[in-house]
Image (cartoon, rainbow, N blue to C red; front, side):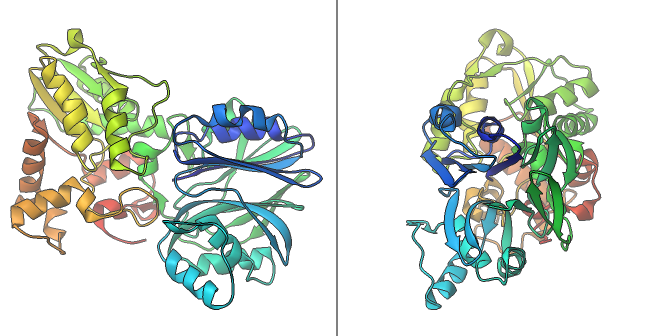
Length: 465
């Protein structure tokens, strides 16, 4: 998932844009980019896979001059993209996943439309979106037609002479929030980007809605048209703890998740409650509050320079980050029965090889793993994360139990079924832990606090919005 930030100001916006975009660094690890419009467009894009956004753009932003701009920390594509269209020139940043990207690109190519940004992954998604938009009668019509053409999700910021068009995908899967302070309007994927910039959130853009931010205010240009299905994983893992989506804070939800996990753990005795940092920490705090057991930190994350191990595109890089960033403290681990709260278990390799092993090697007496969400059963269709069944430890467990790949996994979705219990037992033994218990889906939904039908739960239950 990429992070987007935009600002329209009565003065030069470059500094606000720089810091606002940097506050999205937890969402993407491949590219960063900023575009500012003053007398003309100025644009910078850098590879940030081996560095931080700040270090790459700190000198650049000082040379930007303009009163409106957009920025992105990208999980895959180089952006912002620039296009000189029949509507005039504009820059564009996007977040989401377009499943039928190749099909749409092939169709445009057959109509004589060319693409300049092509890599081994295919066409650049923001460029595809820009060219789909340019097929419309005007920008608003083009955005709405693009929404109808794509399968998956896409939220975007489009910068032109009028201001910034902010459009949230028709499922509301990825949030966009508008904020303001004296002299400027801003839009962000993460409300945590506003706090230290003195910007107050004023509007959650609705599913399928388009707004235009100008120097003199906000104009609602496109009517909401979607059935909101917000990604539940935002609260469990992806989002920053200080952020709120739909007015619901991430840290508070994670504490509630931890409380739910502890509430179902009446039959085990533990000495220490811990969380895999950073995203597991708040889940563990909630568990400690509910259980009355002390929260301690047997594993410390070395934050200097290491990205999140879930987001880099290669398994090799994910494993390296997971190995290097967590440092164990033997004095806290040795001889203790430890609860380990984790946001989720995706592939299981990092938890097994670089977390559990470190705890056993330092003399843990027992290890009880508690993921804050149910077992991940389906690859995400709306965000660049897990892309195949083979990546999921649940599917490996089912294959081992059944002796073959199984298409219909419905019996494994019921947490009261014998097949579900067999799957969890297999995963627990594979990880090498004393006990493994996952969050129940109803408890997770309750912790988030939105109606079930307003959340995307696809990766847990396979039900498309």
